[in-house]
Image 1 (cartoon, rainbow, N blue to C red):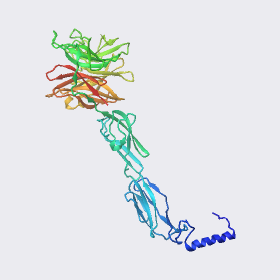
Image 2: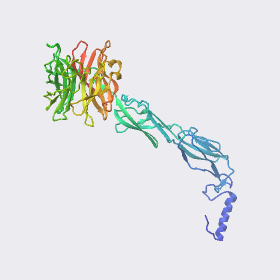
Image 3: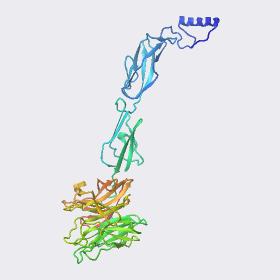
Image 4: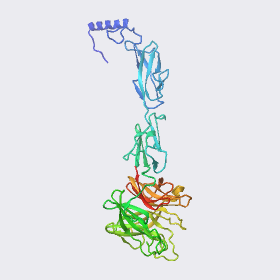
Length: 519
C-alpha cells in the first residue's frame, strides 16, 4: 500500500523513532516484542489454522515460521514438532501430521530457543461406505421380545477404516425394533417395517418382517362351562365367529355316545353364545343331520365358516357333512336371513372327488372340510383354507391345509396345499388340519391348526402355528399348546379367544378355551 507523504519535520521524527527501535530492539511501551533485540525470535505462527481430518490415515504437512519483533520472518529458525496425544495424531520431525484415531489433539512447534506455538486438529471420521445386511435370510424373522435383530452393519471412511461409532438403526412406522446402534437394536413388536441404518450422511433401507411368538394362558386351556348344554354327548370340531350383533358364537358337533340302528354314532351342529368369551349360553341346534345315513350329511355335521351371501341378503354357512358308507366327507352349504335359522342348499361346494349320487365303484379319494376359514380376495374371488387330502393319485391318507377358490361362493375349485406335514416336525407328521387365522399386525397373519403323530407309540395331538403375509404361503412357526397325557383338536380363534377340543387321558371330549396374546 502507498503511505502518505509526510512533512520534513514528521519524517525526521518518524525516522528517529524507527532508528531507535532498530538500534535498541524495543518498541513503544505495550508493544508485542518489547525488550527483544532485532533478529531474535519474538513469535511463531503455523502456516495453517486449526483443521479437521475426516478419515483415519489422512495426512497433511504443517510447518511453523518464526518472526522477530518487527514481525519479519526469520528463515534460519529451526523447530521440532510433536503431538499432544499420539493416539489421535502422529507427528513427524518435519511436521508431517497423520490421523490415527478420533479426537482432538494439538500439533506443537518448538523453536530451539524455547518459543512454542500450537494448533488444534480434530479427527472425526465420516462414513464413505455404509453396508447393512440381515444375517437371517428367512422371509420372516421369528423372534421373542428383546431378541437382538440379526443385522450386521459396517461403515468405513474413505481410507477403509471402520468408524468408531457404529451406525444407528431406526425403525419405520411400525416401531418393530428399538432405536439403537446397530449391535444393540432389539425386537419390540411384530410388523412389516423398513429399518433405516444411518452413519453420517449415508443411509441404507432394510425391509424387515418381525414376528414375535404368541403367548398362551395355559398349555392345555380351561374347560368351558356352559349352561344347560347336553352333557351326555361327545363334543367335536368347534368353530367360532362374532355375529352381526357382536356376540361370540361357537358351533360344534355333538355326537351321540352310542350307535343308532345304522350302526353309527351321529351328530348335529349345536350352537353356543357368549358376550365375553368366558361365559357361554347353550343356544340349541343350528343344523341337524339328515335322517338317511346315505344322505350327503347323513352321518353328521361339523366344522363351519359363515360368510355374507354374495347372491342375496343374509348369510351362507359352509359346513362339513358326510356319511361314511356312501359319500364320505365334504363341504356343503346352508343359508340364513337371521344367522339363527338355516336352510340347507342342494349340491356339494367342495368335493371329495366322489360322485353324487354314488356310482360304482364308490370312491371318494380326497375328503375335505376338516376345519375351514374363508375370505374374499381384492379381485372379488373367494378363498377357503381347509383341512383336506391333497389331490394325488393314488391318494395319500393324510390331511393337509389346502386352498380352494370360487367366483360365486357356490362353485369351488381346488388350488393345492399351502401347508403340509412335510413342513412339520415328527410330532405332527401324520396329519395337519383345522386352520383358524388372525391378522395380528397389519399384513401379518398367524394360523393356529391341529397336528398329530397318532401313528407313533405315545403319539398325541397338539396345536401349532404358522405365519404368512398373504394367507396362501405359510411359514411354520412352532408348537402353541400341548402336554403329555392330553390331546387337543380343532381350534377356533376370535380376537384373543381360542376354543378347542380337549381330552385328558381317561376323560371325555370336552370344549376348552385359552387366551392367546399376539404382539
